[in-house]
Amino acid sequence: MPHGVGVIGAGPGVAALHLPTIAGMADAFRVVHVTDAGSGRAAPLAARSGAMSSAGVEALLRDPAVEVVAICSPPAEHAAQIIASVAAGKRAVFCEKPVATTLADAEEAIEACRRAGVPLVVGTNHYYDPAWGRARHHLSAAGGPVVSISVTLSLPPNGRYHDVVTEAFAPSAARPAPDLRDPAVAASAVRALLTGLAIHDLPLVRDLAPRLERVVFAQALPPVGYAVGFVASGIPVQLTTVMLPDGADALWRLTVTTDRDRLDVTFPPAFVHAGSASVRVCAIDGRDTTYLRDDRDGYVAEWTALADLLASGEPVEYDELLDDVRYALRLAEDAAILAGVTA
Image: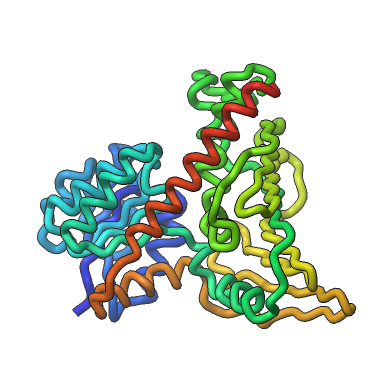
């Protein structure tokens, strides 16, 4: 029998990604309950799956049909909802990134899962993308040391991220662009975007450069974006993102340079099912190799990983999940401090 899934949250990611993904895995999962925070969006989404709907998490956690909880709420609520799901006796938790917005909350949430033996999968879809597995295999097989890493994003406006940056400083309905000349605003913008956007790729960066050493530069970019450089495991890493009102089509690319080649992993835009990322390798001898893309994307792969954990009972790498949080939060905090100084 498929596991009943209760979804906390009814935003665009749930509608465009998680509900279609779960619907395509009918042998493993079925949505039985969707809840919102009072917006009313849960009811039409639940109707698509023949599921119950409610406002607030209490009814969902009391629902005996809910075995797996999918947490797709604002990040500040994630840790408490993980803990509540474990306390309610649920069998597994899927949580969108990040697990928490503070290290103490992350430690408490992950430890709750560890003590109860509850599988926890964090929705780092880029890490689960089959293309990253290919890229990682190439880097291991090629043998050349990594020289540099960069992540470059050019995105059209996205209200979800824009609101994260502006809501604390622009209470008016017009939501004007944040004044990044204000050190407090610049620092908050960099912190929010690193934990809300860069966090897609930080587990991949940590995979290659696990020891975060120091932030070299950090700046908030108008109208919404950031440029951050840091050193990890002796490797320079650069993160650059900008959202322009009339910008070009979305570009989301991770580039790894070794002493033998350059590897580009280009991810599809967010909020679409478009198959895996593409992987291209340009070697120093002029060879140019592009790997075939997979029909399966990271969203499907992360839910498949959860199904496998439930079926196999294999141990969860709780320490790895916690180390991902430590890495991201330390980077965000150090970069925010520097961005405030240089605003």
